[in-house]
Image (cartoon, rainbow, N blue to C red; front, top):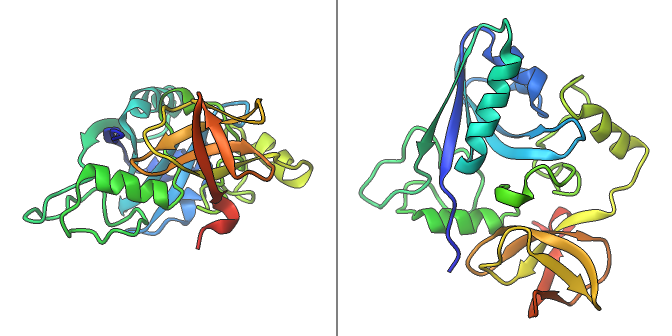
Length: 249
């Protein structure tokens, strides 16, 4: 059995919260209405994804950004470093992403993230995590951070980055990749669970990619484009289940 990671929220609050996050994150934060949510990633200067999170605007000047907890401290520290004169505060705290049937759904988490589980029906954290894997949501933890371009993670399908909003860290590389280049690695489902993050995958003795997130029955991997049926994961034969960017309903 795989173990779902802990999750945390970064809360940015204050009159400049939206404009500040708009300048830092990949998505169009200024377009976010109160009560609405969107996926958003934070990129390093090389255009690689440091973290993927789900951002909600819960009040006029409050935004809450859900992400795996092992990302939150470094991301909050980076946001604080770049906040400069922006009038807002940056805080973080662990949150629950599951609840039993007797509990009401917390204000934070379940309803906004699009998985196939109905919020409030008695959801264990592991069930919620597996639903995210099956939905092709590549939450990044550990060694998968700062390794992949947004396009290689299929984040265009989640509308997690904008090509029109203007400057943000890594934006030039993302735009150049979109308009001038061709991403040769893509997000795929692997028909095997409990695989360690960053585990190498090979085909015919050639390394072709690595695991980015793993559930109980399925995993997500970034792979070099090709035609695959079975792959090798450290001597374990695993199945290729399809490309997330074209095979997801």
